[in-house]
Length: 136
Image (cartoon, rainbow, N blue to C red; front, side):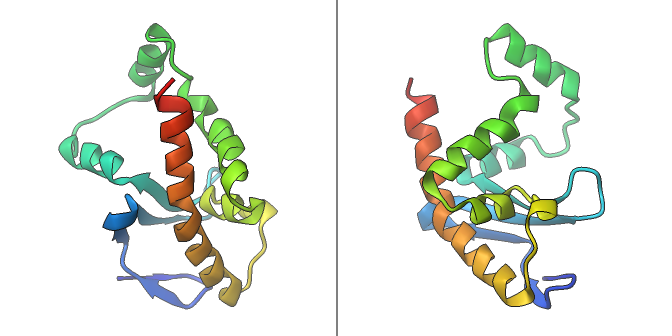
């Protein structure tokens, strides 16, 4: 397991909720320009990551693929995800999932609450993604 600094919480790095269709992976990058505490992902995304583990993928080929196929540019994904998340969960939970720590100050006790709330609401976000975006 890993201990989350400043929170006193110990957890597995990868926690999967098979019946709920998602996993979260502890990254713990706090002091970078783009912090990322947890990466939430669908089971399908985890499967794809495992399938392609070890392959190198650069930013440019992904951006070119998106452009050629009329897809949302990868650099806009976080903003779109935010807009969808706040439709199905409290803003504080969406901030936690997106690691917006400059906008979110939490105590140790509140951190655990937010982690649980994020786990509770994330499947709703996945359903919204599937229903609103993938079936159009």
